[in-house]
Length: 364
Image (cartoon, rainbow, N blue to C red):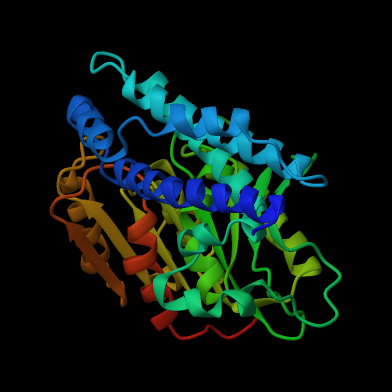
């Protein structure tokens, strides 16, 4: 006869298995979203998920957590509620004005995921969601901190100061100060947030051992016309992190989506000696100065052939400009079926493997 605690967690485990299906389905929608196809996306998601949440929440309402597990129960209940909010908001989006509902659903999804990640020790059924498949057998190793760690690890959210904007940071839980760790600067898109975009990098960073810095732009988006404003903010954060963590300055990378892709160009071209490589995704090359030093900066340009925000011709023209100006290491990858959306699988299957192949730069 199982104990009340075992019976309780059997129910939670079953619910987590059901939510794993939703997490993956909703992530896929975020990657494939096209604002002109909202009804199609809604139908596909509804067919996959169905009427998942009402029975889950009804069960939680009737479930009494074992003594000492009340706090977990409340957090789990809140996470499930946020996921339901993300689902219902997305299904309620109108084709005439989908943005408000879409951004609301995306934000609720992010809040829920951070809550679930915080509870991961109690939710083994969700472990496959937090790491790449080949690294799942290493779960315990990835969760075990190195000896002598005195700095915070995991997901961190830090406020703005007089010298820089707010930012989110991921430090692998197995961080060891006795080895050097590569750092990825991941830049959100227009009207986006660093804490939302960080989640597109959590799985590969945890699996392969990268710190990820996801800063928030000082204004609603990156200072494209005055790039020095946000560049100073980002570099100030990097300097602080260099003092706090053992970062491999020979393996610093920058990438971003949409306006973040555009600003990764600005960051890389302004500081070519700082970065091992940059990977702009669905971005636009601005009228920034090209120096001789920047011609040796490795670049991976990724763009969707069906991009409905920044037409693919923009990316093709940027690639041609770089090759015409003698850039020595520029790779252009055009995704024939992709439009302009989130980048989970793109980061995992294209950007990170490219970062991993690049040789380290001499440390400054």
